[in-house]
Image (cartoon, rainbow, N blue to C red; front, side, top):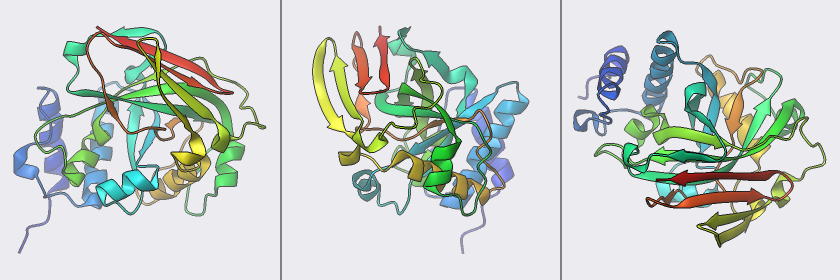
Length: 259
C-alpha cells in the first residue's frame, strides 16, 4: 500500500532544492497526485511570498483540446506568477542562464474585481477585465522528470518569466478575443500565423475555470491579478541569438531577445 504524501515535507524539500537550482527529484517521480501537486505548488508560493516575493497573478496551461489530449489531461492546469518574474517588452535575456527554454505567445489579462468560485462564468470574467496586453511566457525544461504530471504542476508548470508589452487600458469591450490573429516573427521572418479560435480555448472561459478551480483550494483571483490566459501555439524551443516578436491584431506586440 502506498503511503500518503507528506505535503509539508515535500514543500520544504522542493523549496530547498529550488534554492540550489535543482528541480523535480527522481525520488518523487510518480508520487504526487494532481490535488497534492497543487497543494505543494501553493505551499511553494507561500514560501516565496514569506521570503519577500509578490504574487502578480496566475497562468493557465493546456488551454486547447490538442494540448490536453497530448498530455492526457481532462482539464487545464494552473500555476502562479511572481512580480519579480515579470519583464517588460524589449528585454534581452541571458540564454545560458535558462534551462532548456521554450517560448509561448499569450494574452495577459488584468482582472479588476475579485473572482471567487464556484459558479464563476465567462461573462463574469469578461466583465471583470480592466486591461489586456501582448505577452510571452518563458518556460523551462527542468529536471529529469519532465513528463511527470504531479512534479510538473508542483514545479509551477515550468514557469520562469513572463514578458509583457504595452497594455490596453481600459479593456476594449468590443475586442473579440476569438478573432485575434497572432503573427510570430523570429529574426525578422514571420514563422507562424494563427487565429485564436483555431488554436486556443476562449480566454474568459479559461479564466472562469481558473476561478472555480482555485476555490477548491481556498483561493480566488484577486483585484489586480494578471492572468496569462493560454498560449496560441505549442511551447517552442528558443535558440541562442534569436529575437522573437509576437504581434496580436487589435492588442499590440511584444518582443524579446536571447543572447
